[in-house]
Amino acid sequence: MSGHEQRVAFSTELKQRRQNLLNDLPPDTVVLLRGASLVTRSNDTEYPFRQTSDFYYLTGINEPDAWLLMVSGKKPREYLFVLPRDAEQEVWHGRRLGTEQAGLISGIRQVYELNELNRKVLNALGQHRQLAWSFKVDSAQGQHRQRWLDKLAASRNLTTPGTLIDLDPLIHELRLFKSDYEIKLMRESAKIAVQAHRRAMSMCQPGRYEYQIAADIHHEFATQGTAGPAYGTICGSGENACILHYTENTSRLQEGDLLLIDAGCEYQGYASDITRTFPVGGRFSAAQKRMYSWVLKAQQAAIEHIKPGNTLPQAYKIAAKILTEGLIDLGVLSGSVSENMKSVAYRPYFMHGLGHWLGLDVHDVGAYKVNGEPRPLEPGMVLTIEPGLYIPPGTQCNELYQGVGVRIEDDILVTAQGHENLTRGVPVEIEDIEHLMQPGSFT
Ligand code: GLY
Ligand code: MN
Ligand code: MN
Image 1 (cartoon, rainbow, N blue to C red):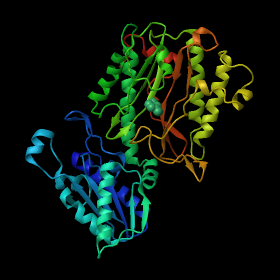
Image 2: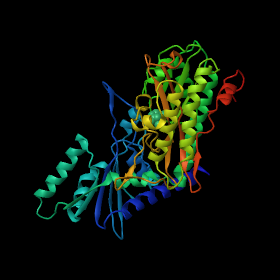
Image 3: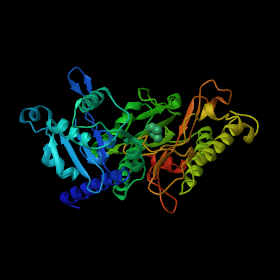
Image 4: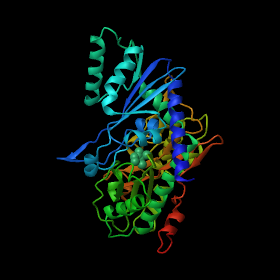
């Protein structure tokens, strides 16, 4: 596809998303959504800009301080508000889109500079009875809203909206189902993360540091044109693997230890999220093989369960039962599988969920329950499957298992036929991992 065709495809997709949202609303509803602003990192420097996922989903605009205003109905209206072009500001802080570019990207015809926002919003609010906006509000946005509502209340000609609708669940329901356009980007995000994990696995050596392995991962993310990691990269060797969100990555890798890497990138907004656990020295010990094999068995069985109509809690139960069998086999638990399942005895050793939705956010949005019941899976959903076993030091069991953490995580697309594992390119079988870790195997 040429650059022009890509831009047209993107703006067509964005128009469809906005149309889908407006179709979910009663006619004559005003929709108001604000994009992200820059956030101070220290003194007068800011974090790199990250648009809110909802705003990006609907507009494709990747610039601070933008607003989207729409009105639903037979003749829907759409307005976008962006920062004005400003030669001096742009010399210091970088190019701004301006109204023309923002219109081309988003496919919105009526694009204004921000100084038009108040007038247009008051006009729209004053003429319609329903207003849909996010019920989650930060203080900057709260001030804007209060000013508008106060103005409306004080006006003789305008009325305040009588019905408020929470926009978040409506957008999040749309975001849960990935379009073909999104799936293509998620495949690419997954592919880059796969390559990064393969690289890290092949470059792992006793004596290197966890941060150096993280750098190997980030090298791949950076050179493949991603925005970087989609979340803090976890490189936990030895006991560090038992800390779920370990991101210090400061320890030296020891021969005989396992290394757990949980890393994914953000490509064109879309996250990947992969975990692999492998031996620092390239060969699993017998004890490591035994523990690892239980987690792998749990993961594969849970993935097998992913298909339309089945639910995530069902897959969780399948994984938890296999992990319980594993904990009994390793001597961490005693008694029968059913007794241990009933008392949830595995919980101290598998203390997180089985997986989560994946998309523009690594822990993506979308309801997990519908009418109080677990939601049946449907084609177009993408989720992770990531069981683990973490045996804290001091646990009453063979010391070979103490202080060992294993997690295996893949990104799974639900398809009409069942599922597709988007991240299967990183070895997961013991022999395949050991093979890739031999010198000269990485390509
Ligand atoms: N990396 C965060 C998670 O796996 O959920
Ligand atoms: Mn995850
Ligand atoms: Mn993860």
